[in-house]
Image (tube, rainbow, N blue to C red):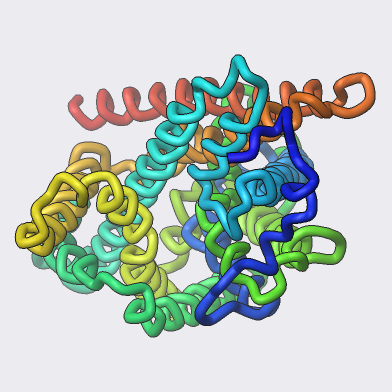
Length: 438
């Protein structure tokens, strides 16, 4: 390992791109598509609800500001990872490996925290995607319930019961162990998500929009919920390093124009458009995703509800892959080889059942989205990148230490989002539980 404080000329001359051996590297266009796919999902359809919490003017401003901050955090994390690659003389590093390397090559008093930084990053990734799987379970169950309650009214079941029914197909789907076998499902999921987005726009602009009864600035107490939803929707940092590490020309990931800039600009525009006009159309009656607000007696709306359910069902194994990958790396050395296959089957089923259990215990889609955004995406996408860049650049924090002060503001913003968003969401859950038991 080359320590930052004693950096040699060899480490400065080492170019990690020249040493990467990617079997099937992705072009800039494909990498852009993968980055957009990571950011455009159920979070996109939750944006109108975010605007109903903030008001339309604050929603526009807030979405633009948060997009800039999230994009900047991705930028500094990837840049730090590249610096760590040069110091370690390694072609590429994962998210958690970058955290370890930044501390291991940072100031002496920080090096003892390197292993903790790696474990904390793994912990954050693991529980972030556990939370995403919980959201997907509740979203699919809620959409199915809405459809069947309308067209099969002889049997009315609760959302919790549909969460239990979903465990069977989900347990089977997560047994797919290679990403290449998931590619057809991912393609279908993207097509259905695009179709759902188009149908939502059709209903939003199908009739004249009313603006007079929509507030420009919402109640201050609901702004943390807006922050949590937008951060959940924007953040795709968990897949940033895999995308950058498999690019044919990784030097095109950063810069201007670049894959990152184009992706974040596109995401910001789509989120602002759907959030703003979705709020103008449905106002304060918005639910966890805008598809739940579409009419039940019109075939395009019915198709949208089916499309989003199937799309999320097909996307579930992709997000689940992050969870099981972390588990495998840490557990496999302690499991005898002859038991590894049965262990994989059992653990995959157990994690799906755990996420389903969370859905049964807390079948509140809006609140789970806010809680995951506040707790995990704030940590993964804001707090950790701010800390990692500061530690890595400890000997070179810029004129007047501007990098330090900038990252302090980012970390404080992340902590504010975490604490306020979690507090507001927990209060909302308590109210819902109380009202449901009365």
